[in-house]
Length: 461
Image (tube, rainbow, N blue to C red; front, side, top):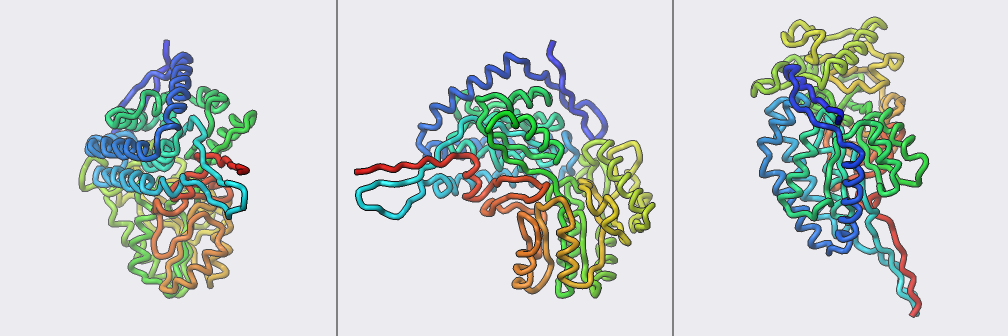
């Protein structure tokens, strides 16, 4: 008898979906079909691949209202915000289609008399995409669409919290007319994921998730020379200089800290403010934070939903308690948020001051609605604080001097440097991290690089 995977909604604790896990025969059939479909797909002209991927995006967007509602029930995002994920999926999917010719074109080299020389990009084969629940489409689209454009087949394994997302992809692929087996999904457990990674028919593994999850992927891949792309955790910092527009910085950083209930790998988790601005910044930041309305995410008036599960909320509660025990001050009264209750995933947003880097809340990923704010004397101290982390996904600088922001960016150990914005992925720019935030690259013309292999042609006339 098949094992059953259950999805418990954080909205009300109800069973939202249950799915049988694929058995050994289903996994084998999926691998066989994906390999077969890819051999034909790689010979399909790029223009036709682009057309079919555009049709997939069209089919997905056509069901956008249903998709958004399912996001809310599966992982708890407020209904007013969930449609944004559909729009983001469309933006990135269409832009990667537009960039495909540039990203997949042959590399020309200087002419050499008597020779024809070029470097072409070939698809890898079967790409296994391991997607998380927090942005179930925005994380996966970064690889799914470019992988198909590059001539690969895709097998998607989505989080057990968001299984319907994999199914919606498959429905869109079928509606678009993609060849049978080219895109498929599997509901499987961790042991089966490890076996998939170890299977010689899987040619690339794209994982988005925790650092520990990334290590598990690496262990599973360690007996093979299979490439992996890893987008892992973050402890993303912001630095507010004395010359920053305070109103813009406060509004943007509150949103960057608490959007999606703080469950974002590139969300703001620590803020450093130049002393001249510190008091005013903190006062305004707390006032904005108190304006959130925590509650049932299906209510259109709710602006802050529950965390994905009670255990995740308890983890953040423990970080806050540890910091307060060590001398931090919590500036938001949890009692002001009626829905915030222990034993549930509903957690009030929290702002901590008098924090330091001995506290977990300033060093370890929180992935929840809490942020610590520290004063700094100058740029040098800010850079030292920002780099004092095992993570390096994004960092933002808030200043009216873009030359200063660029100079600071050269010193900050991060994959993306923002100035006067945060918590955003631009599909024209490479999405990448350093240190424990992972390795590899998605989006932009460079995003096609990991999904293809170079092949050199050295032809003597």
